[in-house]
Length: 370
Image (tube, rainbow, N blue to C red; front, side, top):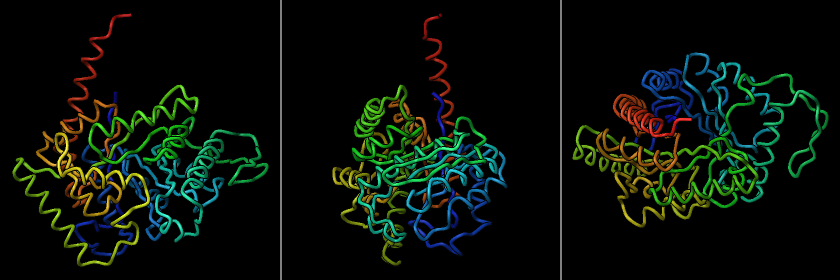
């Protein structure tokens, strides 16, 4: 089973441990970080979405036009544009990138953040809207005759696009969430289903839920699974754990010295994914081979926030534990974005790829001859 590595396409050098040094869209830094990923073995980078952040689509176009092989994943919230417009935007971006685009559809787990851009639907209504939206976008990407749509959230008539993606039948669609409504929507529509880094047992349970939802939707296949972590690596275990605690201290100092988070409540988050991360953190700081939860607890379970701590060998083996569960997309983002992307690419990615190739060869050799 092939394995892919997804990094972050940050548009500035700020993170949980340090304030940004310049404007929110620093073109030079954005390109430097993207090229660091391209040069060090990463497959794809995510352009994330925030209500006040730089728009990910033009940022992705800027990077795609200046890189050669790096694939791009653009996050998109359905509430910010009509699906007819979004489908054309993404098809155009697939051309700019020569077929390197994937799209991550975000339903939105925080009512306050959604309302910043005028979205007043309930969470369950948002999931239903996202499911309808993805279906429309896919149909526009693949339909060459005008069609009408009369849905719960969208209505239009006699629409046909003259702009189609390079990729056939269409770019990959990714989706994430940890609630029954999320499993139902993503299980039905996603090519890649995205999870945050939980212990192996809980991850296996979520993978099973996604598979069951895909089956219930009548699919003959299942989405590929992505899991996201914050790697903290060093040459020895002792140095790695020293670095982990130093990182935690920097998170606390940054939080104490900066404005309160505008995106995510540090207590009582609404979204199921963050609730699950906080529950894991409450059970203990360390899980399985290298999973460490204080970083998630300190940030309120905000997004990708659980760490994998250890030497490159330890972190690689921890990632392979998830691979053995059926995870084929490994998402990783350090705290010092540029340096950590380079180090992870140099020291962890080759170890994982080598072991995956070995396991695949052994599996092929063990299969009976036809």
